[in-house]
Length: 369
Length: 231
Image 1 (cartoon, rainbow over the protein chains, first blue to last red):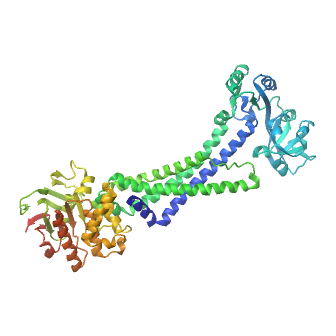
Image 2: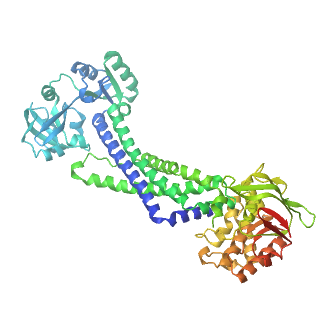
Image 3: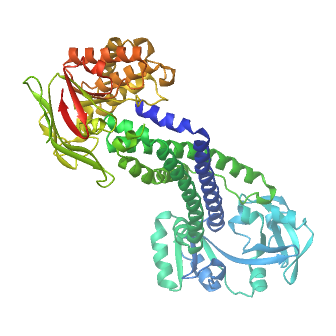
């Protein structure tokens, strides 16, 4: 109880300084939470594109980006006929440009693809997809920014396409994309195969056998489960690392703020620490007071930061331009990691002040009254 | 010639300083020049002498707050700062009272007094009982919840006395405990100090300028120029 009083008393003595430290940690935590959540959301959405109605993905081995992957049409066709395979949907990814919109993701798919099957059709219907060679279906957001409706002709790249339908998906990337019949896409992007083949098996138990068969039949292709792919795909790894690095830098700055506060706090009460020492406080007990202060600053900062970060994420979700792109699902695991990191940062910030406090010699501090 | 300050009566020697030297500023200022001193259990000893003669330094060395350059200081038969857990020593064997009370201003009287008990891990109920006992003896029981800023000088010094005795230390080192008080308050605090020391069997070693008050102690030891002269 006395420990707690000492800690609170010390924090309360320099309220403004304490508040600034808490704010430093809070903004760092908010930044980390926002950046990591947004990027993880983006990764989740991209994974969602791949795992739409499937549990496995087949692509070219050792490609740095799926846009460069080339799965031969013959391979996709063979895989589709394996007895264990329920669905094998080849997907060709490409990027097209339109006036004012230099990057629009294009999905070359078959009419049987889960994206077409499972989407909510706002205009047009599934039967029209693939009937016309230059007929495309737009995601809801793409239709908005291209100002297109069924029957419109939209210029993309060097060609013009007729809009035959508009659909809505939960995925921001898909919602802002263009769905082309696979053959049209192959012709448009001058490719013969597809970027990936998404696979649904009759039985999940066959996954290992499927992966083995891909390896044996097509040595330059690889079959991975969706979760496995998300973990191993280098682009995702880079994004995740970037998110944590940016967040970590923010937190390190917050930690420096805590260190500064704690150093000032110790320097301004050398005499008080000497009094504690004369009254039998051990080095560990004195350090516990300093670490206690840093921990409170960090934990309060983390809680405030989580609140700010959550509000910021919901704010981003409300921005129309980001609709569907920001997944604000707050993961308890992530929140726990952020709080623990904030706490560790605070403790690290209190290390030097604690050592300094432990070295204070009571006799010197008390001599000059 | 070094004068040895022998205790006037034979008994259990609890403090012994032998040929203690102490200097500051890399030897530029020598404060203690071969001090020999002994005190027996339960004795009240006044250390008198002009400012800078080494009274406080001697108290700090006995209390383990500082190290002698040469010589040795024994308390309860064990050499201070050598072969001894100094944290336990400060918690249980000695108590300090300073001229400026050295209380933590933002805490209450009760919280200040409970600091040594907290450091020693004393049971809360036992600590509170002890505090109530001391507060009654020092007339502070009605001020327990008050912050130090709200207390008078005499009350602050009495609080410091309570704190020093919280863990039942049998040696009390008082460095000019009445130095910042007016004459009347000073006499009251001094009487309390002696009364507590005598009734609880505490060895009191007190540095003071006030010869009148010092004369009421069992022994008066004069310090001059870093040496001790028994009066």
